[in-house]
Length: 52
Image: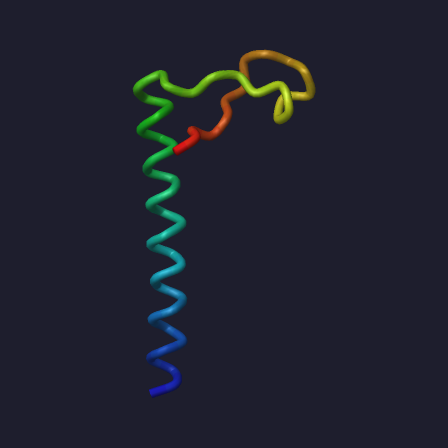
């Protein structure tokens, strides 16, 4: 039973991470992300994550 619980937790984490990736990719495709100086070292052109 413990093995199933551990596997279930691992799979839930994987689904959560993939869901975040999907949301970010959707935002990129829709052009809703803006440059973020904090993540680009002051260079423009990089994308920041959406704020929800």
